[in-house]
Length: 541
Image (tube, rainbow, N blue to C red; front, side, top):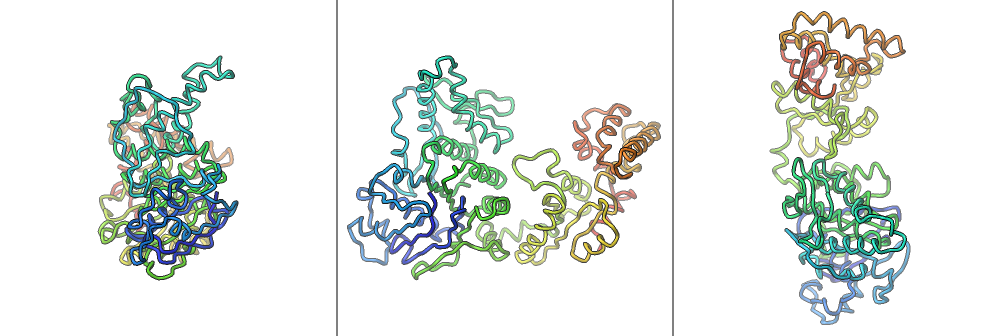
């Protein structure tokens, strides 16, 4: 189910609010704007339109716009919510399967601190959505219900004829596995173990660090919030497979980095015929949505509720993600704090964008630069934007955003020299992109000067000639194989292993990347030729 356009008349905050121009390709719709701007009111309109108990739940003091004379007639208000879908025209009064699954709601007040299940009964029809909050201001607690549903479905599967040769753990994993996989993609250190012993104070159990059978109640508020949404999405999407999912403030209790990972996973879970609508104030959610928009053109739509006077007729169309958009987003999320938190200088560099699911290489260049320059350049931060082509596409755009938001901030880009010609480098310099004086950052880290300092630092000065000779040999062999003669990346693996053996090093980093970060980078200090050359490449006027 996908919305093409909508109109809401004399409902909650809206006098006459129209949203148009929603493409059929849209899978994620992001409502942004400050508190009180009307985002939740729109979800409330959807909820009222789709509720099977509209007559019972109708509250003229809540559902009707306060400037309009109250009418004790729910159908009068219902008829003022006009939805047009791309793929079907349905009437919620029909109570058809299609109507019952048209919407699924999660309020912003998701709070279930603990639960223990001791007895089980048949779960209700999933499409009845009996735990649905009556209003978007209502508490929304579904973890225990989803637990019961998983366990009951496991029991049903156990006695199915086709599963008579299966063991209980296999059947449970078949149902819990998708939730476990979603959790693993969002959290690095929190693993869903399973459903425990359902007949003995049953609850979800986790592994975290060295802790085993870590109970649901021991999760942090942010961990509970993220788990709640992932669990409910995975459980419900099997039947709500032609649905508009609406989540009010999915970022509640969650830090910015985790917000990005959570939204990317929720997007991954959206069934093919469905849309996910979220209302958010979060920079993390908004930025991740913008990245998803780049990865999936036409699939992510932003609707900006800021600066709208809903006492007058208003038409909202998909927002253009431009510098003005980002300025409003930062103003809403941070207010005056944005100016206090901003560094004086930002250098965009190579490396995958920072996410919750980091890989060892993801922030390598940025980490190296921070380590080397944090003492002399404490107000400079280094932000990875991806490979060279991604930097070229993103740096100019982000520079425009930040320069408008923080006019006193200096921003520029640094990229590897690779095989660029002098003419190419000159052109890049005129465009605000600086180029390293060497092929890549590894050539500074594994410089002869730095390797000699390494030998001195561990009391093995006499081994420096052997280490430098091995480096030259590896580079010569690499060049013979067709690589450039300064291609340090091709030899750092064997050179790292040789260095550890020769100098008998321990606790120095378990991979060549970690070795470079924790052992080599701190040796590049002011007063060394290597530091001076690298500082000149990054910071020279």
